[in-house]
Length: 170
Image 1 (cartoon, rainbow, N blue to C red):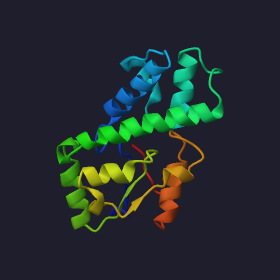
Image 2 (image 1 turned 90 degrees about the horizontal axis):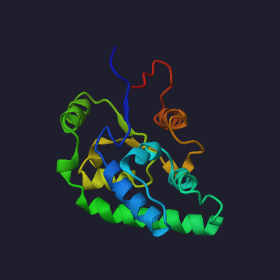
Image 3 (image 1 turned 60 degrees about the vertical axis):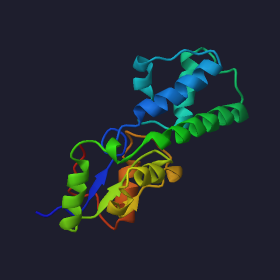
C-alpha cells in the first residue's frame, strides 16, 4: 500500500530548536525572578507559549502576580528572543536523514505536511531551506488544543483532503 501522505512534527523531528526556546524562556524567567533549568524545560516541550508561561509562573510561585496583559507581554518578549535566535539556524541544523527522506518522498510524489504548534514553523522551514518539500503546514494559531491532543493532525488531514483512516502516529 502506497503512503497517501506524511505529516511531520517540527521540533525534535526535522530540527531541534528546543535549546533556543529554553534559552529564551530562561531569560524571561530570570527577569521576573524565577529560575528554570533543563530538567524543568522538559515540561515546556510541545505546548503553547501561553501554557509554557503559565507553568513557569506556577513553578516560581508567581501565577497570580501578572495580569493577562502582562502575561501577553512576557510571552511576546519570549517570542522576540526566540525569533532572534532563529538566525542561528542553517541547513546544517536539519536532523540526520530528514533531507534524504524528504527528497525520497517528493520523488515518490507523496504529499508532505507539517503539524507543529510553533507559530514560527514557516520561518524555521525557510531557514532550513526545506519549505519547498512541504505541500501544507498547520496554522497553529487556529488550534484550540496543544499536543498531545490530535486536533492538529486531524485538521491537517482534513485540509489535505485525507481521512484519518489508516493513519499511524509515531
